[in-house]
Amino acid sequence: MGNDKAISVKNLTKKFGSFTAVDHITFDVAKGEIFGFLGANGAGKTTAMRMLCGLSRPTEGDGHVAGCDIITQAEAIKHRIGYMSQKFSLYADLTVEENIRLFSTIYGMSSSQIREASERLFKELEMENMRNTFVKDIPVGWKQKLALATATIHKPQIVFLDEPTGGVDPVTRRKFWELIYKASSDGMTVFVTTHYLDEAEYCNRIFIMVDGKISALDSPSALKEKYHVATIDEVFRIVAQNAQRTD
Amino acid sequence: MSIFQSLVKKEALHIVRDTRTMVITLLMPIVLLLLFGFAISTEVNDVMVVAVVDQHTDETRDIIQRLNVNDYITFKGLIAPEDADRLLRSGLAEAVVYLKNEDGKVKSQIVVDASNTNTAQTATAYIRGIISGNAAKSPVITNTLYNPQLKSAYNFVPGILGMIFILICAIITSVSIVREKETGTMNLLLVSPVKPQTIILGKLIPYFLLSCIILTVMLLMAYTVLGLPVSASVVTVVEVSLLYIVLSLSIGLLVSTIVDTQLTALIVSAVMFMLPVIMLSGMIFPIDNMPVILQWISNIIPARWYIEAMRKLMVQQLDFSYVMKEIVILASMTVVLLVLAVGKFKSSTR
Image (tube, rainbow over the protein chains, first blue to last red):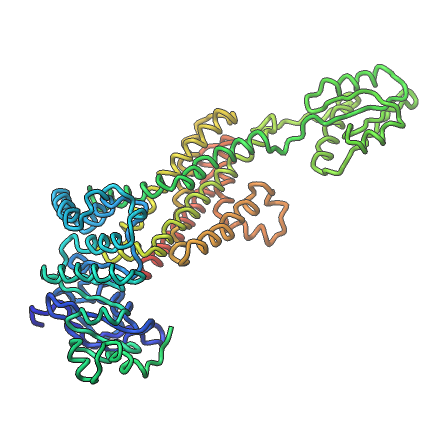
């Protein structure tokens, strides 16, 4: 496998009993790429992502994430990735600073590194005055930013964002994507799942998953050309029209 | 700060900042102890007794005198036979003692208000004792060992301990773990390099410490305010209690790996663990009086063995060797629960 690949999987499959949640998917993600992972609810996005993060063992197939084997080196992967989940998830009853400290300690940073990283982060996010505010008391937009910053504080090679903008207004979403671009320009690979199809346009390449399988995989413009349509929304409707699974 | 320390600190902050739960967990044991120790009691005190005497003799005077000075009885005086019924009905008297002279002997009869069977039986026993204590040629001498004053507080302390730790360790711990599942923070911890066992320990240790604080407070209260006799068995009391705390924590952990919402965690812990503690552990209702089937079930309730051990240690003041059986049972239950819980937790993460 080449060194320019951040993620590379082959025939990745996950079965739960007789149900095949993820069905032989094969794809590569280049370093520094923003890779969009699209699919309706129940298409198998979260299951696929859990396997890539080392949270769930594939039934079949293999893959490498950040240069580590997803089956045999799951623990090593955990050091090299960041993760931000679907629901906004930081500890609401801890302050901004306490959350940052907790997660940076968990990722094995030393106290001087933590101090340095949190100073930088407060400055970048302009959150100096919110340092000692409980996370539950800060506005949603800020929470989202903070969650991303926390997920990337240990400078992971790849950051996994599982529907990071769920339930957020368009303006905040826009701002959030600016942060994603910034992370990407810093050399981080971004793997993002979403069901906002306009967001797909922001990605370098997208992957549309239907019923656990790959239905389309290319850059947004190439996909639009291929299906002769103007938006990703229409592309999605064409490839997903034969979907069997619903919620 | 190490990863483990920061996890423990974070959990401690959750506990301390959740003021309501904190106050409940700290106050409830104290309130329960005081309630059961002083307010709620199965002792029968101040039974209101009146007497009907047809003819005064030395013997009847003697009996009346004894009724008068008995601490458990409030003697309201002598009445006319026709008033007896009215006094019983109005509740001004709970028992009427009839003393009748026949052939130079005193014959006696007790009429008691049995609307509360417990009070009635105890009152009857008191009065019978007082009367026969006078007449009997060879009185039966009763020795109440271990709890000479028959204080019901002695009996309740072990039960309350058995209940409190299930409450704090099993219910509160399981709810707190499941809360992290619900809010999604558990996922953040699981994708991090932290080992699952570190996550578990980081969650359990703060609750273990909280339980230790509560144990200290409860034992101090039991030995001072409630006046349980202090003896060498105190060390064993602490040891067995720590074992029981670990066991309750394992229950909490197991519940949290099985259920997915805080509400279910609460209901499962409360119905499957809290109710049996109250009903079947022998805390309130004697196990020997239960139908055989319930007696069997009570065998698998950890609190039953803990409470039995505590009664032996705290009330009878027996030493370590007498509670070996209970310790072995509790320890085996702990091992089984821990293995199940950790296994389940690991399989759910991978």
